[in-house]
Image 1: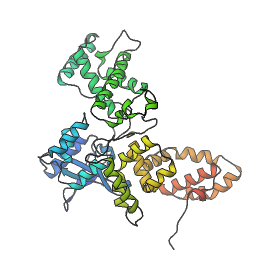
Image 2: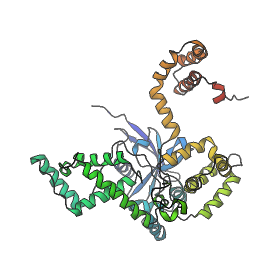
Image 3: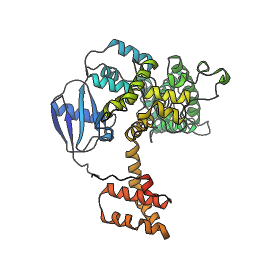
Image 4: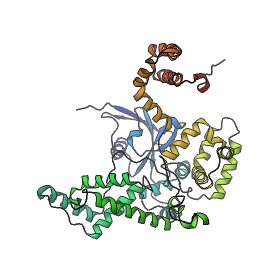
Length: 427
């Protein structure tokens, strides 16, 4: 049995109140267990929300949705939920979303103004997806009545092999909840995603198998396809822009066919066509864009640029999808986007994946294989990489190793490292 390494966290309880939290068994796997540890250790009553400091994004704080984002000696901020809510904000959010917790609404009405702004303007808002399609799709909990039927059905199936006769009401509840869960990751899932969900459903609730179909889950897969179509129609009626952009009313007269020029993710975009932040309009965000042009010309102004770029993300994405501007025109309108730190931030907003962290993690995984392939190359490549590999063999610093491997890879591909990597020295 693997023994968890102890961990420590720096916990911010207020403006000037910073405490240390020791976790003898390491960082908990579930967010609920971490909440319980913090509330027990520091005697906190009521509901709390946690944010973690992300070093890759200027040490900004982001909502903590998974303990996998935490590292030993990391920093966590505790935010107490207020007992009262801003009714106007709650009503607006309810009119735009069909699946979220009340705690999210309460947190938006917090007295912490900076947190409210961040919630509404960053990829952590209610209208943005926070992760890619999961490796293992988790079947959500259904209504109490449905869960009770499934519990008895699974017990009877394991005992005698008898399948559950599902009523239309129960079937509807299952499909509705699965459609909501699927939409958290994709508005337009493909055939493979339906297959994964149907298989996960049968794996968790074997009493729902259908022996008459080509496979025990093919019937549920087909039902999910129809249900997602109906669910998108419902969301379109509620004003969800991600699906209403494909309605016939939103298309040009020459494209007046349902399947023509469908605007949906074709790659790994998690937030392909997000809604505008609550309280913002195209006109107000255009003003922010014009202000951003001025702010981008100032020196040492990264924090303001980051804030405005996060605020205008949805407006920028809708512009990309609707207008299909050329790179030259787009760069003229959003020059700040082409800075290295904004490229990383925009990639994270769009795909919910940290660009540099993912790249270097994969580089570390394949480093030994890359080194082996490059070392096996002879001729001029071996001569040019000899000094690079000499430095690589003498160091234990992971950053230096990464640099050496990247430079050697550039030489291996027939390019000049100096054309792609520039070194600056302090004079």
